[in-house]
Length: 452
Ligand code: PFF
Image (cartoon, rainbow, N blue to C red; front, side, top):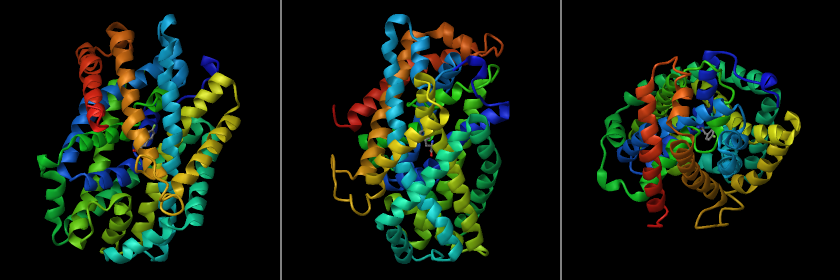
């Protein structure tokens, strides 16, 4: 695609909101609480925070930088900026392409549950604080193969149509409007949850670490979550970076994105865990945790059904922002490398996800016993993407920037050619991506996968 006609984000604020729109999604509202609950609480949170600061933020900075420097999709970027004899780095882009499809396969399934819960909330069907009733309402939804598939397909049709509209019109317009609302509603939920009798037990679970619970697997899961949360390690933020404005202050923007994303997750955690203990839910319930606990908190406050409906609408919108960014990875590769129209590229991508999505959506029913490495298709896709492909992509991006791209170019790009005067900061980022991040990811990956 010609540089001057390439689509892009149109303002400083637009960049921030769209990038945040990719980061904030089901990862905050669904995955963060359920993984924190299943992995022992505060210890997991601590490792996740460390991974976000030491690995996540630096990677977010260098990924968006590479994209902006090359102004291209995840694959072509490496062809453009790697030395001529090292074009093989584009494998990073292809791994990201694969990861995007795998993530979408299960993400659309969860988004489907959220869409279904909008109607359940409205009808009053899930207005209960009883763990048994909440559990059976959720079970009824996910164990029905027909409704699981139909909701997933609805989600795919919706996001597919938005992505066809293009970057600035589609993504920016949707993301811009609804983020602040979600934040506000989460705050209200926190207040309610914290004033429930027995709330302190939940806070202790979330903030008082038991170091014995931090095993190599827990650390790998926390690292995988850090990647998944910030949409890094797979060329998604690289693709978004390619739409950034030339004068964008990348370190400032990415730091804001990281803190805002973290606050949404923490708010979700503070809304959920006090209620988990107050009502007697199991913190380690797994993927169903949020779908049972959030309705319970709403049910225990006035006007609950209305707020609950709005909450699931906003969560659905947040999930759309994230899904659009996931779709953008393959769509940008297909349009720019194979000269497909945006419509064609979107249809091909959606078609592939539709096929991959079937076994994932049926993982609570027909394919529940289809175990590969002991996991059903839903869990397998999640594990392979978050805990394998993303960290591996992260290592490769770090090695590329730290040992091939080099400090002078990074300084030029992250400092907007000396205009930002942030050399010290860039040097710190460089040390992190050259040594600290790749080494720590490698150790965690090898230990977590029981290779060493
Ligand atoms: N960051 C999104 C979330 O937390 O919901 C998920 C995601 C989006 C992961 C885009 C990866 C990605 F490339």
